[in-house]
Image 1: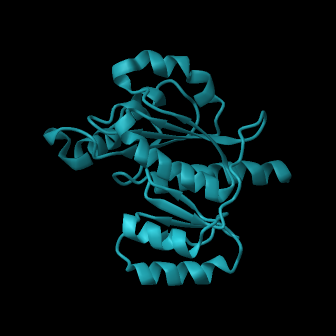
Image 2: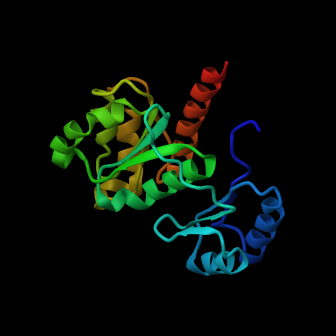
Length: 213
C-alpha cells in the first residue's frame, strides 16, 4: 500500500526451504512477489513450486504471481533502463523485473556507453520522455555523468563490477559516480539494479498519484 509492491525476498543468503516457505506465505495475497539473487538450485525449486511464475536466468530473479508486462504506450509514465555495455545487462534485467513487478512501464537501451557516444545521442528523445532513468555502467562508470549533462529527468546510477583489475570490483565506478560533476545524480550500491529501479518506480508512482488528484 505504501510503495506499490509487496515485500521483496532477498534470496542469496537464505536456504531454499526458507525462500519457498516465505514465498508461499506472501503469495496468498495474489500480488506479484519478487525474489532476487537466486542460485540455479533455488530457481529450480521455485519454478517447481510455482510453475506459473516468471524466472529470469540473466538477473537470477523469480516472480511469483507475475503481472503482465506494462507496455510503454503514449502518455504512460515510464522508466528508461540504460546499460553502458552488454556485460551490464544482468543488472539491467534485475531493474526491469522490479518495474514489471510494480506494474510500471519501462524501456531498455543496452550497450550505449561512452565508447560509442553516438548511440547516446541517437536515443536522447527516449531518455528525455521518460519519467526517471536507471543508468548502469562498469569500467570507470562515466555514463551517468554524460547522460546527466544531457537529460533533465531524475537519474539513478548503478555502478557494476564489470571491468579489469583497476575497476576494483565496482569500487572505481562507484567512486566515479559519487564524484560526478553532473548535479543531482543519485547513486546506488554496486550491481543494485533493484534499488535504482525501485527508486525510479517511486518517482513514476508519485507522478501517477499527482495526476489522479
